[in-house]
Length: 635
Image (cartoon, rainbow, N blue to C red; front, top):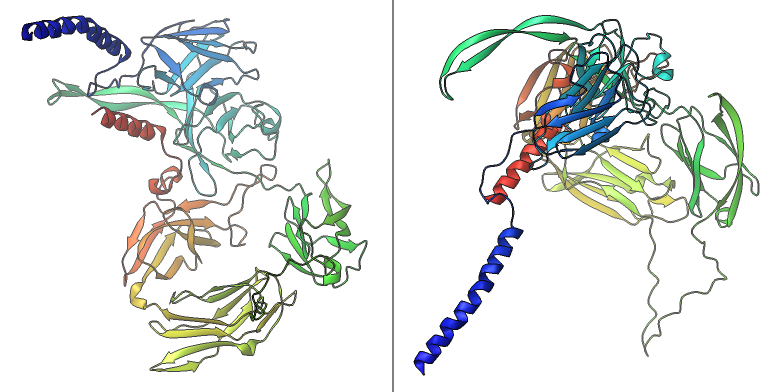
């Protein structure tokens, strides 16, 4: 019996063995690829031939075929591949196997050098290793133009490198060429904002940057980002020497050899890109979200407010007007409840409007302002009252107070202030009902203070006082001290706080060289946001009571002295105001008093902004991180 069972088990195992082998075979077929932990392919593709040949002369072929030593693919060809002279009809660019085919749809120009700049768009099909800055060149004439111009494009307001912006040359030096003619030669910036325009003939040029929305290679829309250089560009070349090392093996070098090479200039052109202000004035929209307020939004700033006339009401003294500094956002708070309960307010609005000739002309619009929120009336049914139990008293109706946001932190900055922000304009307030008390020993002493409406925000009020460090204070407001425009009063407010010690801060002085007579410095946090702003006086910008930590700094040469950065204008040949970054991140501790020298011209503009602040990171860093992540996954 036992022998029979053993025989049965062996027979079952023999029958199962082919099935197990088949499963193993199928699994191995489905798991094609490099074994975990194997070597990663880091070798980029290699160009091995083409039709026509690279550098070919007197070519009339509009179809180009490129051959590589391994299977390749194109990444973001429409963004990265740039053909010069620029093609009005978009060329056909396809990758298949080990080949790339480019079909130029524009007619070829006579005696012209053509360059197809692939940048880093060509990668291998396996690991995505980029080939690098690969450019293919041929000529329809008897020679190849070899001059090059290179540089960097930065955002003018914050020196951020701009990726993918078009950079072009014009041999026509008239100002109108940029707005009417396509570029002669073009390139596009990489992830570092760098560009290199190749295949340039000797001559004199003007250089421009352009985010070309309509793809006509000209600045034809005011909304397009642009850059221009005040100096003419004259391409040239010079012979230079570099040291090359001959190695015996990976650890031992043989000799150091001097090698001559051709270097092309200029190689450090800096273009500061900007968007012009929209001077086209028109009414974007009007809205009445709540019955008691309606708003107008305009496309551009204005020197004066529009004129408003009521068509179904008397507009005289009917509103409290809230506006911003540019006068492009205006809110009208309706004072009279009988008026704002109207379903529709009919108004006539007169303002300056930009016509088709780009001239400001008077315009009057008739508007029907309908509230999106319904106003309750006495005739409307009230909500059913909750049925009360026997002997249960009526619940008192809770008092509704005017909402207010109080900014009085429990740990007050030495330079801080108290702020009250209301939901609606204030009709009146009682200054005697506002109190500030200072704790002296164990007693609270009432102290005088400055209290005023904010100069920029209609609904904000601020309390100012010279706080004594480490001391305690109490801020109180009696109930009904403030009355809103619509009759609500504030509840009582009470807030206690302690002022921080001077020992918790440090002081920073910038001793600045090279700034204009009108300049200011912005102290920045790690996100490139402004923490403080100080005007440069006699070459110094002083920052007191700073919290310990890391900071960056930016200087603006304030040409018009208005205290803010201003953009440029191509029509007026006006560059944007210059911006400079302190090239390092600063880190200081409490109680330090530092004077930091700063020559704003000592570091080139494209190397000033610290890498920690840049939002545009180099693509090669991203690819290295991805490759390391893939390696870690396999290991």
